[in-house]
Length: 325
Image (cartoon, rainbow, N blue to C red; front, side, top):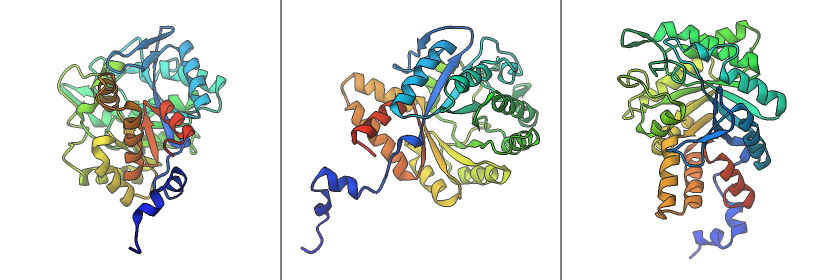
């Protein structure tokens, strides 16, 4: 036989030499929960090994991440006060604003991205202002822009709107530009599905809606073309990176988006994915470390160049060991 594919599988050196999909520590982003008014850390019951951090404990985790080679975080805030308009989201002394300022002062090398949404801060748990029981798109836009601006003024390197309101990228871009932050990039949760994989996150952030659901603004998981439409709209409005969320059950979407848009593509391996791996690993049903690696590589193989994952520190270790990379 002239053609023998096994020739380039004979040992680890050649397997790594011809590897088609490369994974690098610099592409990892760790999602991190910071809580207001408390010290130390609290484990999240549905996400064993993940915590809500007080501003003191946050610093220890950042040190661990940097030592592991993870140099980017995505911050989610857990405020002590919630109201109808989510005023803690854009307060000058809000939890994210304080966390960003503190982190950048102590760890200027850490690249800080902030989630921009209202759901953690509103008393009703929805991602925008209400008009009766309807989430009012247009009245929410200015509050999202105020939130993004306050994060950048505190020192955030990038903002990432996750609310799924129409027109929010353009409003945020204009607000940042008008205030002198023309160089601050926006990572848009453009292709965000109404997914059951978000359950543990809503416990972690206390962001479950008090009534109804989010299907009127997050996407129907049956649709791909709609996701492409959302991505192109956000590109027109000034987005710099396009995110697909969740990751594992949406690899086909990641592939289509990465093939058709001219921007970097991020994918978010969400809380439900994490929780399932941890639960199955605890029961001995899977080899947890191998599954973590395989999930990550499948996401990059599908076309993502940026990977948001609660396993970021572990993956950095696996890359260092040469298990993936």
